[in-house]
Image 1 (spheres, rainbow, N blue to C red):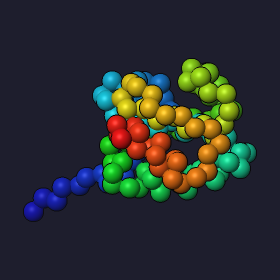
Image 2 (cartoon, one colour):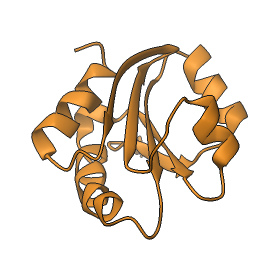
Image 3 (cartoon, rainbow, N blue to C red):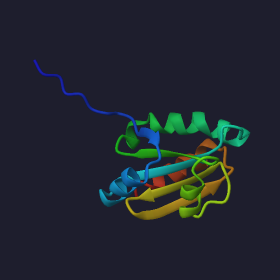
Amino acid sequence: MLIATASFAAEIKPFETAAFEAAQKGGRPIVVDIAASWCPTCKAQKPIIQSLAADPAYSEMIVFEVDFDSQKDVVRSLNARMQSTLIAYDGGTETGRSVGDTKPESIGALFASALGN
């Protein structure tokens, strides 16, 4: 008997330009998480992001993690100025952006915007 395995959670992975561009071209819902290891706001965002990523509603989503300190070129290319920045995309279209937000409701709304909601 074959058992189908399906992903019921968003994929969370380090940001790589080629993977990001492929996800955009493929029309995938995307959230970019720009964080720094020393940032208390980023630390507060992590469990919220992980909880949302575990929701089956976001099973097609990719969350790309950008290191604010070591990936300055990516930070600049995304027009971000601070760590704790979250950017949502529905494919290639930016649908929302937040900086310093630690409220589950508004981060959830940002995630939902990537689904076209």
